[in-house]
Amino acid sequence: MPVPDDISCHCGNVLQYVDLSSLAAIDADGQVTNLQPHRLIEEPLHPLYCRRTGRAGMRQIRHDRIANIVQRQVVKLYHNATATPEPMINQSSEKRGDIRITAGGKQSILDVMVTCPAAPSMVSRHNSHLIPGAAAVHGVKKQNDKYLPELFADTEFVPFVIETSGRLAKATYAWLDSFRKDVTEERARKLRQAAVRTLCVDVQRQLFMSNATMLYKCTSLLIILLRYACLRRRTERLG
Image (cartoon, rainbow, N blue to C red; front, side, top):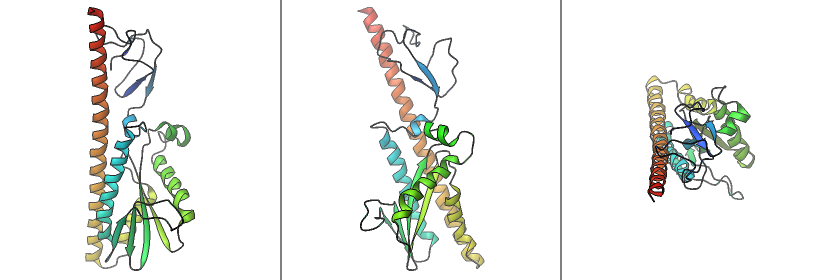
């Protein structure tokens, strides 16, 4: 989006506090003017974590599609395992995980989280812009604090946390690595490795596609708003 000459700008900046439908917001050429208060902030990945009504739905769709992939692929990591969606943590709690895995008489609750290092809260509180993986670390802690106090002692909890950039939390990839480390037979170990690799590739592919869709929809909306503002401006001038 064009900005005034006295403001430095680069690709990905977000212009706030400018009403594009106002006559004072833009000139005849569609350039943002200095006639309104405005603030320029750098949030190039804002569409990936936006919580506004309507846009938050895209975040939920991204989460649900990744959770579906994990549920479909995770049973291949076990022997004779079953996976069911949205299990209750216990009978007296309303909290639900994303997947219940039952294998060998043991149960695990897995919960998926997609977290964005560019979110202002992550940057200001956890220095995620300076520390690689800080957002994922916080995501794991948040999930543990939420679920562990109410889990049965014989139920394992698996935080499946991934950043919007594709980085897995250390706890998540340690859990994935455990499937091959405990296998001594070479052929079985290679099959487990292949299953883990397939799961990771499918999750990364879905994450990329979801992020691309979210960024595209946000960009399309901004273009529509800017075109409408320009058209209204010119119509009112002619009138």
